[in-house]
Image (tube, rainbow, N blue to C red; front, side, top):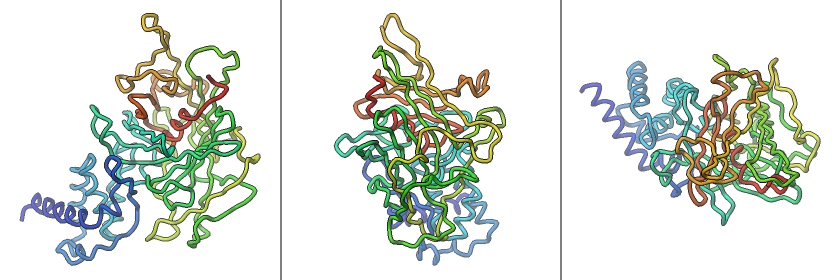
Length: 405
């Protein structure tokens, strides 16, 4: 049997298993039919253990898996890579070694990819769909540049109004968007006016990150979580919109202080913190993470602190100033065809000159967001921010801003 036929035979068997069971555990949902999450958990597959692949020599196995990973570069075929990682612990460890981080490979594969910085040399094209009836926002990876009707589900966020603020709960599962869910990964919180926002991660965004203190600590879900799991509210970023006290018409002005990313990350050779795996309470299950519920405290103030363990400052992003178009009589930005509908929500973020960034690095668009249809918006991002961070920043643009417009 040729090596090519071995790979094709393995893919065929993986596809058969995927249709029987992996779509439930590793589905990652196409379009809106399924919002299930790909979980990095061990799924025993008896059919595979009994097959000829169970006793394959390690060297040959690694070579086959490397070829599968290289050939399945886009979704939905890339689900075969995820399926390989779910066969057994041995296969999983090999696939984790083979699959490179997002900034290197430019490929979204496992859920942890959503917490990793985007590609260095290009914008990763995604889009957001808003459901007005239930106040849920869905993030998809664009699979077809000509249409936003088909995509791979990535994240979901649910808007929760409070007496003094608004929370956006972010989850890996579009069918269970709540803090008590095991797929809860973070939140966005606004002040009463909708002018200042704070992004929190459920897990440490970098080494030495400290959990936000609160008045009360409440563990959601009765499952036991290992004491070594440092889960909670970790400060990621602060977003602020400039007040429009004179009521003059014009584009919004926003600033994002990335508490978890050093300013040096956008310089040539710069490095941003990269999460490589979710913190598990054990090796075989995705834990029910504790979170901290509290009223507004000093720890949740909107003033940013120093970056943990970094000598240089934090990365500051500002919206790119639009230009006034005399013929169209409107403010314009060049979205390279990715935005088609004028909206006050549209923006592009670039590194602030205050970070000492000059030249091309300053002009590079790190995140752009804009409207393309009713309740449909594009979201394109790149290094050094992650999909989770980009999604949270875009959610802030949806929120009502009493004093900014």
